[in-house]
Image (cartoon, rainbow, N blue to C red; front, side, top):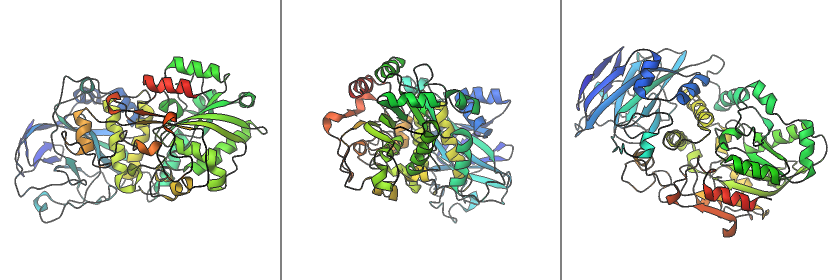
Length: 521
């Protein structure tokens, strides 16, 4: 353990790793030993390790800080990209073939991602402004990579259930800085975000129409063998034409089995019986392709398995998947798509950004990743592994220096062209239903992340607007320009703050289950 005095000195932790932590008094150490030993010290789960491995990211080193906050010397005003008080971590540069990012886990469990900054010298902190920079702005060709890390210490309630059942990290009362490394492939250098994301999605999130029965809706489709085993066959597709079918459409970073994993088996069994077994799901790219391209691919796959005939469908859609559902319903008028073979009757929008979300704007995409990562840590959803893997790929894309060209995320931008066209007047569908949540964090880590401090009440992104951590509550069902909105009160379920439901944990709530039973067939 190396002492931290609260001053401006560099503290060497060994292995050419240094730390400057003005305003923190205590100790810091570089965790050492085998991977298992470090993981035990971190109290991290195998879910995180597995996701890192699949994303080709490796934990290089972990720094543990146990400290109390003291007055910061006036000459040591370090600020991170959000303008918050920061500490400075310096690690050896690994050259052009590898990139490093830092996952910070604060004392209350809030998880934030950090990218190298252009602060060149601790001695020059006051001469070289710590400017608000793009997360992709990095400095290469130097001996050190430098990271500004959120410093404030939130209060910790170690007796709370949320604080003792972490999905990714269990350590409370200390700050962990996990330095992760991933290769920079020659094939990806200087490539736009879309190309990088599309390449990953083609291997790990490929398009597919799959069976979604009570026996297999939680089974993954990550490998070719898994996809083949669950792919919708021609005979199964033909059966879908025998009556109204039920289609599941997942959201960003996720998959069908990940997004809907928490639906109780009893409800899936009941829905399967109601729809006569005509239940299927659509896996699609959610990062590199927009909903228009998603629907084009849906049509092409439907043509392959069902050369003739048409479908009548109800849809359960989560998050961005609702925009795909609306494009399938209204794409002919809004985008000139041929959607004549699919008639959408009812569509349930669970946490769907029908007005968009500010977190999809370039300046806030890191905030979205931080919120979702922390949400998985605080309130684990059944599909944690899949969502986390998608988040890690987004982190890698940002680390590669690409961020703004992700069409899948951009489709949720409130000011983007896609939503302007989708929400244009002149179309009406009375079959839309809404599930929206107002989530107010009770966990100290999430409070600090969302509001800037554990005691503040104003969301730093959504301000006073109720939201589910990712999507504004009213944005799911309220007026947006399209004649189908607002969705009538009797056709919406609003989950209050007391329900404790966030964006990733909706489908096992009793009221959600009850409303799905009442709304569908």
